[in-house]
Length: 550
Image (cartoon, rainbow, N blue to C red; front, side, top):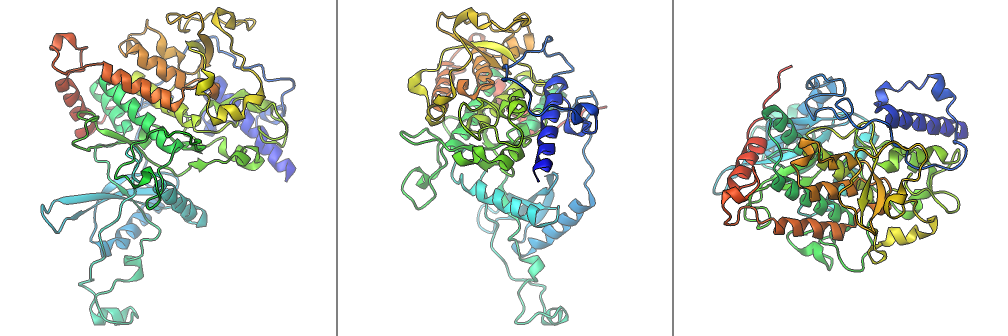
């Protein structure tokens, strides 16, 4: 068993070294190569810290999102495997007793199938209603247990405004076709009007609200096809929605029926006083799992649709004792989509973990980054989503670190995670230009050289390249927004913004930017008037996607 685990540890370290160096996908990793067999476990000495590559991101590193893959080819839809076809037929039969009508498939993954259904409301105004059903197409108890866990996890955030909500299907109706003769033929007892079990049992189906405006993935796809840029106004509001979703995961709503904010119709994701954060980690925040809905009448969303975070299939509510669980930590390390790994997963610091151990096992000092899974993981993946929207490219792969300047962390802003890890030793960032002390470090061509303050520190970030004002793609976006996103992408979780401070900063910036409130159009930045944003929302969210030509 020990030898088997050591093999797993070695392959994991080799895989992520290939990811850091070349941006290699797992399918392209050669585990039989001599380099893998001879990979030293653990590496000798002490982890030297982040090492910056010699070249900045270029088109091969930041390929177009989302129509092009890493080889520059047009993406083509995956053909549905036979298991998906079978699962779709089974699901349509299961919901017959609810008079749900099949609309279309919304997508499928390795285990799950997501389908849109509709039904007609039997009371005024008699319009169609929609809901989403998710079921497994992969067989086995593990897949069924995973879907049940996802359902329970999603329900944990009931009433959170920026988290997808589970939905309830319409009630059962009598089976008009259930004649006595038909029932006797099938060996069923009792009077007619009942449904066969396979037409009525929905215990293995998860129902969700329908986000009719699609995902940020759709918006990015459309923006590429139509050559549309995300307006600054939209970027600020989407950023605020993502932050609210992170707050909801860090401070889940109180279950209905208990005292607290969970009893409100909508939990507005505020940071409560004197309450420790949850270590809930989503692991799968990306544009595909960021959905947009229409909630008319919300004062803070008059133009930009509300964004909701979805897909909690691989999420984990991590406890303090879990951080020293060897098997669990190495299982959590690869949980993310390609390009959306966090430093807590891909950092070279894992290579210095003793053989057969968890990063945070044993005695302090513990690794600062490797396996330090907290709510700050969500913040990093949220930052990667914002990079996609700002650049209309996927995040840089391999990840590209550079130094950015930021105010030092106020000790009064430290939260429970920071205080708990205070014994791990001082961070290796120092004030001012003296931070560049590493020998043979390349020139700081993408470092932020504008916001230079006497007491600011320089820290490693994987979003520093978006601060390059010489790039017109980045320069068109408010520098304040780009700088906050770059802070969310700090290598060391300690330096990522505190949720309360970040939410306040973004909310203040949104209020400070008057936008269209009675201002003449010539005083508003291009593309940000009410009319401009309405047109952009219509083109990116409300119209069908334009398929690019290969």
